[in-house]
Image 1 (cartoon, rainbow, N blue to C red):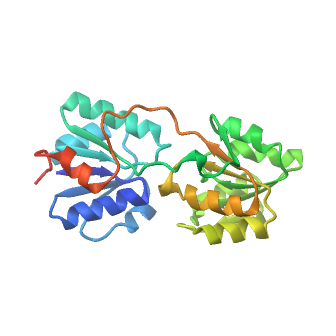
Image 2: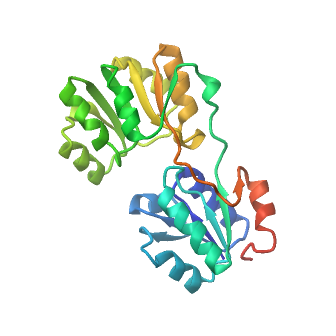
Length: 252
C-alpha cells in the first residue's frame, strides 16, 4: 500500500497515475476541496495529521511506501513524514519537479522568508501577491504605508473570509484557481498596474515560470521567497525514477 501526501496538483496526478497502474494507493489531502479534485479510483484521506495521526494511519493501513508530494513550503508535514517513516522502517520518497531556474529572469529579487519579502515589497507601490492566504498577514501592514495590494487566492469561503478580516476589499481580491498561463498573468499584472510581484519559490507546480515570463514582458521585478531549507533523504523528479526507488516496496 502506498500513501501519497498529495498537497499539490502534481501529487494528485501522481496518486491517480499510480492507481491506474494497479498500485493500491491512499492519497492524503488537507481539505475537502483537495479531495474533490481527485479521481474516483483513488482512496482519499481528508484532514491534517495530528501528532500521532500519521504513525497510526501507516500502521493501520499497512503502508509500505510514503510518497511526499506536498507543497515545498509545507515543511512541517515533510519533517514529520521523514521522522515517522525512519522510525517505522517505511520507505520515504520525496517527489517534486525540478524548480524553475532563477536565472530565467534577471528581475528576480530573492527573499529569505515572508517577512523579508514584505520588507522588500515595501519599496514598491502596487504589489501583486501570489503567495496563497496562509501568510497574507505579514503583508497586510503594507496597506497602512500607502501601498496598494492585490491578492490572488483560492475561491473558498474560508480564504475569502480571512482576506476580508485582514482588510482586503473585494476589488483587491482575485479569487481563482490556477493554473494560470503566462498570458493570463501578463493581463492581470498589466490591468492592475502592478510594479512588483511576490511569489513563493515553488517551481513549475506553483506556476513560477509563467509568472516570471509575464513579469519579464512587463519589465517588473518578482520577489521570490526561498524554499525552507530541508534535506530530503530521497528525491525524485519523475515517474520513472519514482518507480525505481519504490523497487520491491511498491505496495502491490
